[in-house]
Amino acid sequence: MFATNEKGMIFIMAIKIMLDAGHYGKYNQSPVVPAYWESEMTWKLHLFLKEELERYGFTVLTTREKQEVDLPVYDRGLSAKGCDLFLSLHSNAAPTESVDRVMVYRAFDNLNDAEILAGRLSAAIAELMGVSAGYVSTRESDTYPGTEYYGVLRGARKVNVPLYYIIEHSFHTNRKATEWLLADGNLRRLAVLEAGIIAGYYGVELPAAGEPVKGDLDGNGVLNALDYLLLKRAILGTVELTDAQKAIADVNHDGKVNAIDYTLLKRAVLGTFKLS
Image 1 (cartoon, one colour):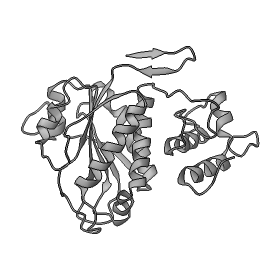
Image 2 (tube, one colour; image 1 turned 180 degrees about the vertical axis):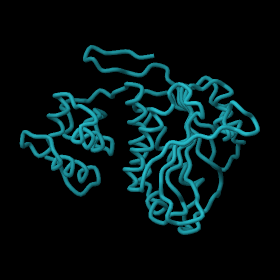
Image 3 (cartoon, one colour; image 1 turned 30 degrees about the horizontal axis):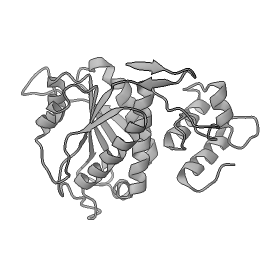
Image 4 (spheres, helix red, strand yellow; image 1 turned 180 degrees about the horizontal axis):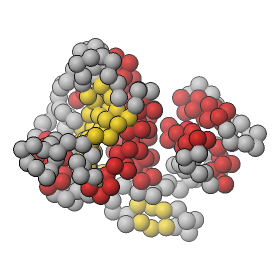
């Protein structure tokens, strides 16, 4: 599955990912931001995510070639036969506008330790979007005990996909979250973040060309949200940086890695500060 080059970089080999853009056409219009349609957001996001995943060397497939084409949810899951990972991308809806959390649905029985990647995705997406929290959830079928409630996941399980998820990118009944998802730039940031987390889960890195980019903690050659999330966790003590990463993380060149570096790096990713 993996190969290592002479520099010790780990590269992906033959890992296949199926991406599913939830819904088609114009489906699930936001009641609070009429310009937003869930189907249009997920189509854009899955194309951005495909591009970012392919930068890491993953083989990426999609359940549909055209946005206006429908495919039953169970068949979407079935189409992932032979893949290592299946992701169905969505936004959610709630009766009240205040609900704004990220939800990632994984295998009801935690097949193949599905909780690990689900937890990483839900927490990071919630932080990037600035919503209240990220959660992992499950639901077993009442009609078909021993399998998934959601047809798209049931189909993926039927064809023995090792890991399969539904990602609900907060709620399009929440005005702030919906307006955030309407911006293509934010969807690109989501794609960069999610691709980086998936690559990290599989132990994959991109080779950096030339000198390391200041603040580029995930080593993919560009600054993105995953970089400042890694730095935040390092400061909180939940991850340990290598010596090389510590040098890259010291963005203000004071010989220390602390909250000031985190603030500057986050501003650099958001485009309000330029690192030197």
